[in-house]
Length: 295
Image (cartoon, rainbow, N blue to C red; front, side, top):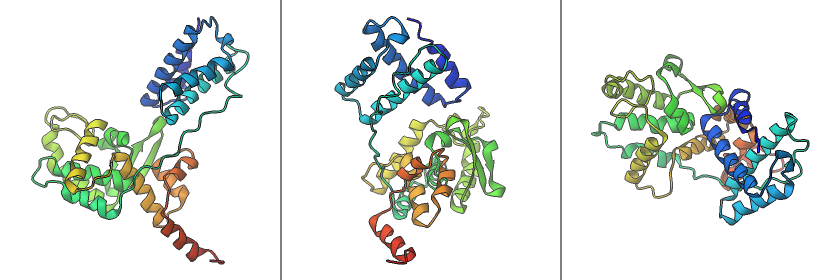
């Protein structure tokens, strides 16, 4: 069966300019979907029916996949069929009348300012990694970076004299972010006293390096963060994303406008930002009492 799959992947790369992680997810999802379709004896793309797609979604449920994963896979399938229809390869897009499985809006943990301070204080100052690790924690929290954005940060992206950094976010979308005084101080300490020793002969342009002079990976950042979280005595799950979520929550609790937070986080859709903005009931009541004339 001619799938035009490579044409679709080229479109993702060239026209939609999706991130490498998103590209890999689409490729993996659709390879499995098309393998299922072939197993069902379908000989041409135009023979794929709503029944086939519903059956595939049902098999994903039976395999115990999370509803969020199924929603993502269905989104990949819908995008693929939309491409096939737009290119005239199939007459009808069978996904148009199908309802996307609803992914639950699970809110990640949020840390208090006291808890974040406890994590940075737990960093062992005698460690050769201390200045780097504190700078990483502060950058994740003070700038709201995705862990991938932190790992991809280059020296050329730092404009510390202007208190700004340049971030290349999802879909290669660029944004400028302010960097606060605390994060800037710790970052400068790391750049001055620690990074030169890590750099060695690699000549890496990445900001955050391992002791071998190689750029830190997402896994490495997770490991070092959790090391200091455990040392602080905090027992709830904490990831780099928890610090990003805390960044957004604390801004909103401080009175920041939702659109402003959306721009800082690099969200293309404000509904994504709203998921991050769970304010506690006490704060909601206080805002209501302060600003509503009938409170």
